[in-house]
Length: 304
Ligand SMILES: Nc1ncnc2c1ncn2[C@@H]1O[C@H](COP(=O)(O)OP(=O)(O)OP(=O)(O)O)[C@@H](O)[C@H]1O
Ligand SMILES: [Mg+2]
Image (cartoon, rainbow, N blue to C red; front, side, top):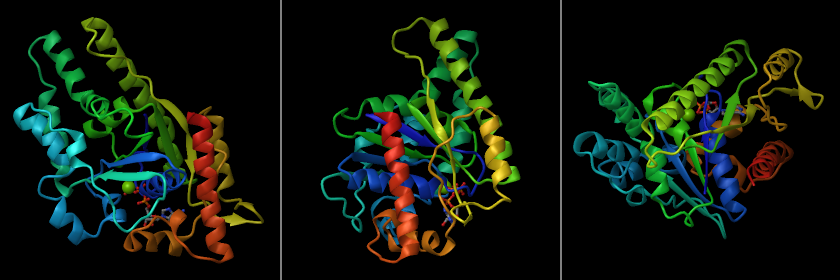
């Protein structure tokens, strides 16, 4: 089982859209996928479930917030497996697409987790740091390893503790970004902060000398350029400098570009089926879908 976090603390760059489509296409190709919505905006959740479905079946006790709450309130382990939901409106043939929903009140969990980090002695601090940050990593380890091929985590647009639990749980990070000034500025910061988190975590693991904790080392799959405006089969000249700028940073970039199409992407959550699996015809749809398929092939090539 490999875990991929879709992450960027810049908002609105296409994280949720990419998570939903990658999850759906991987499942369609026969993979067993668990998608986890870690964003209190719950956009991934509402890409697969209607608000009514969520209220009726999940809001009360079956969201990722309930799982963090069990740890915060009672120091107990609620099984992640007990939170798994099955979207009904989507059919993936041989594969499997399951979801763990988010909750609008997940926003409060970060503060509560932060208070968990406080400790009197250096040893307390270290143990609390590892206990909190390894929360999701350990939760995923307790899922039956053979049940899923991939876990895809849709991260919120921040670098708070919940997001850090996703990084610590990840084998890979996929970083969607828009090719514009503000979006590309954040890439260098993200790399730096992920590096610092990994360094601190692993130092604490070494210092505490306890075999219970393993070191972490998420690998960047690549920066994925989204919302590309295509002209003459390539990104418009206004976007090209930003793509070049990111490449010059030395970070890995994905070969696939995701083009901008506001109409097709905006309608998808209401429909409950990600764009890549919608049965529609026409050249515009084909172009959009084939890019998402290409992305899936590229990701598979990098992780297997
Ligand atoms: N390739 C695209 N072309 C046009 N619109 C897109 C594209 N991808 C996503 N969008 C739209 O842009 C908006 C933001 O996308 P999305 O929610 O996937 O971003 P996000 O990074 O997850 O945002 P947040 O940081 O708020 O979680 C949505 O309305 C979505 O429909
Ligand atoms: Mg999102």
